Amino acid sequence: MSDIKYFTKEGFDKLTEELNFLKQVERPRITQEIADARDKGDLSENAEYDAAKEAQGMLEAKIAKLEEQLSHARILDESELDTSSVHLLTKVTIKNLDNGMQLTYAIVPEAESDLMAKKISVESPIAKGLLGKKVGEIAEISVPSGIVKFEIITIST
Image (spheres, rainbow, N blue to C red):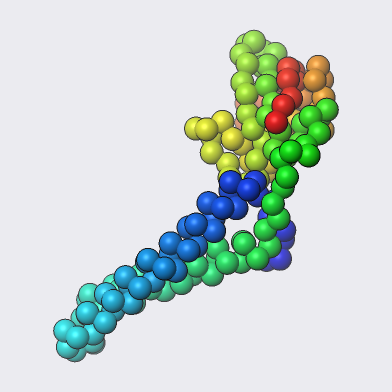
């Protein structure tokens, strides 16, 4: 997995903070749990020891995954964004031409998507259908129930 992953400064900092927490807080805590369980005697029948070792394995896998993501991370400079068309890190207001409903979404890297915060992944079908469109253009997006047409109302950062 050597794909470059794009992040906002905020997303990169959040990932770095999580990695540091896992290394500096969680790793020592699990190491202590293993030591405590080991002190209780026979390891062959020690469920606490087995659970702690399993937790350690999952933690180390998560740390490795975060380190891999950060090693291929590129931070996007939001101040240099062009808002003439929809692309990564732009905020777009769209109007559903079937029901007139308007929605505003931020197009973000996959790792930062959060539908509740109206941040959709650049990899999502809606974002893919909007990419490259300009204000006033119509995006036809394939959804399970058919094709939905959206008009691009505004594009901002």
